[in-house]
Length: 94
Image (cartoon, rainbow, N blue to C red; front, side, top):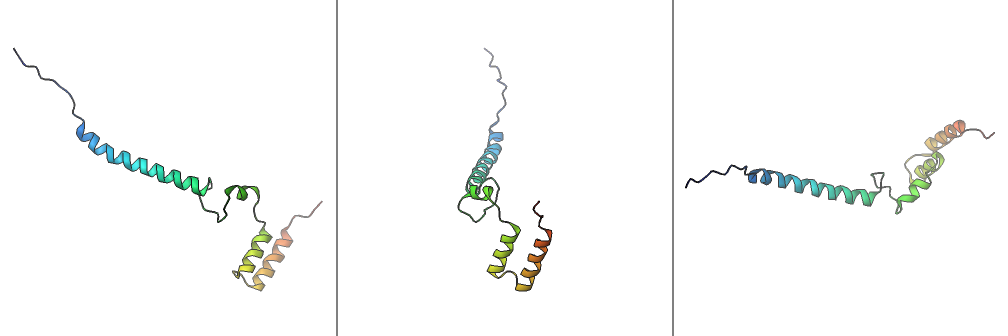
């Protein structure tokens, strides 16, 4: 009786190389999902507690200028000059 040789491909080494890559991809996907869920669809933290508030209303240029002046980011001369420029470029009501 003759013993035949069974030909097959032993892909064990391929799985050993593939599994770490699979785990890295799964962990990366999980981290991305957590960041996406915690920071909202914009991708960045807005500093507000509710992401939906940002989409409903944005600060006007005048409000941004007032906030920056109130926090001390800009001095009085810069504030006055910027406020005059904004007023000059504001659309006129019809």
